[in-house]
Amino acid sequence: MLEELRITGLGVIDDTTLRLTSGMNVITGETGAGKTMVVTGLGLLFGGRADAGRVRADPGRAVVEGRLNLRGTLGDAVRTRITDAGGEPDDDGSVLLTRTVTAEGRSRAHVGGRSMPVSTLSELGEQVLAVHGQSDQLRLLRPSEQRSALDRFAGPGHEKLIDSYKEAFSRWRAVVEDLADRRRNARQRSQEADLLKLGLDEITRVDPQPGEDEDLRNEVQRLEHAEGLRVAATLAAQALAGGVEAADETPDATQLLGLARRTLEGQSAVDSSLGDLAARIEEAATLVGDVSSELSAYLGTLDADPARLEAIYERRAALRALTRKYADDIDGVIAWAENARTKLSLLDSSDELLDELDKERQRLEATVGELAGRLTAARREAASRFSEAVSVELAGLAMPHSRVEVAVLTRAPVRDEPAVTVDGETLAAGADGADEVELRLHAHPGAPALPLQKGASGGELSRVMLAIEVVFAGAGGPPTLVFDEVDSGVGGTAAVEIGRRLARLARTHQVLVVTHLPQVAAFADRHLVVAKDTGGAITTSGVRIVEETERARELSRMLAGLPDSDLGIAHAEELLSVAAREKRA
Image 1 (tube, rainbow, N blue to C red):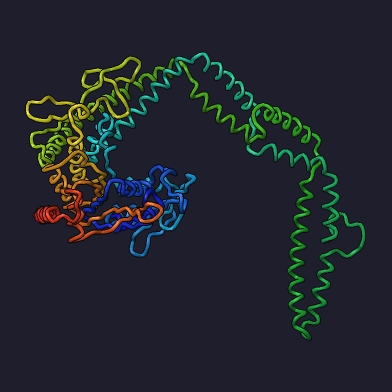
Image 2: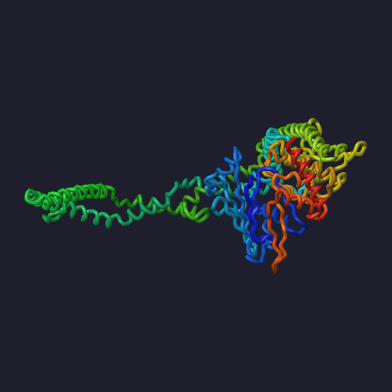
């Protein structure tokens, strides 16, 4: 749950802190007091779009901080994601989230004390928070959103079926487009393939090996300077150990080191430190002996071979011809050849390959059609359950004679658009299946079933949306639900029922409700009031918790605009009493 929310420098809010509870949190206040800024702050905290126009000129930046404390499997998953990203939860397992927006529009995010991309906040928000407002009601009018709503309700098994369909559809469309492209551009592909084959033939004839150009360069250096290298190695060998063809009796390094060692050993009985030096000289003599042996072996490898040198010149010329055409070095030439072979397989437009692709297209098309049929059947089954569940909730929201119907409609094929055969019928197919979903409302018995955008008033749409959210909550979803004036256009008995439904949601979820209805506010476990202060030169707003008498005065203000009215307070206390009894039931 979200334990605490602090907002600084956002809109009319200068600096305020909301301490939230795990049940139903209600936020009320006069029009223009800043209730909307609370929801805006929540949106920013969880990765929403930053609007620099809402940042107060003083201090020139808006900061939203929230403390998130989650338990269970979801909590473990969220903390693991934060830890993997470099953040650190506090000792009690809670995580501090921060979003900062400057007046210039720059935005920064911090999670668990570490700077993070804003997308990390968005990712966390999708897991822990769902915000529902009047804009969400408008979104629900779109067919794609209605289909998504039904798919979410259908459950995890249905989601796996959708994933299987999407994978098959993607592969089918890729094969269809590949086949069409090969047929459409057969001549161009053939010309490009011929050029690649010429290059591959030339490279294959030369058969370059990885690093061969560098190896040959080093070998040429040795062959061209073989005499100089031989003289230098011979002189060094002679100096170290007499070496090859010694010309005089001058003692070599090995002899001199032996003399030094023996001399020191002769005096080591007098001073033991000379014995240590003698041992080190012996180590040096061993090293000199090893170098001398290696020089002798090196001299054995030196061979001024004119024939070999000529062969290398010719080989290097052949390699240079390749590097002039295909790459800067031989490794690049080899990479070009590998890429060319891959391209050739993609450019193949032979009749044999086209036949194979066409068979693959037919196979995948049959698979997509079969999965699309299963998807439609699953949606229709879920639609029946969804319609029944939402209609039951509507009955409890003072719409006892209304019924929601979910129609799953197949798509008629459209020219030049993807189509598949489903149960013997040709249908248009998209990435989400071969059908459309439409929510319809029977406003009263005998009334025709009309699409929501045509058959529902503002108040009815609010209650339909709430009914859908109650149904969704029963099927899982984020642990924190935010409702921003979804009760707009509702009053009387319906308002009480909305409060009762939200309180019921709060038994299993943390619920935040921004409302102007006292009937809804009466059901709160924690009542927060946004109050405007116009005493200074600049108007600001703050949030405070109200309880007992203060709460009754706030409900009286909401009822009649008179917080000190005895009649209004009596009515408010009656509302609180009724709500308390309903919550205990």
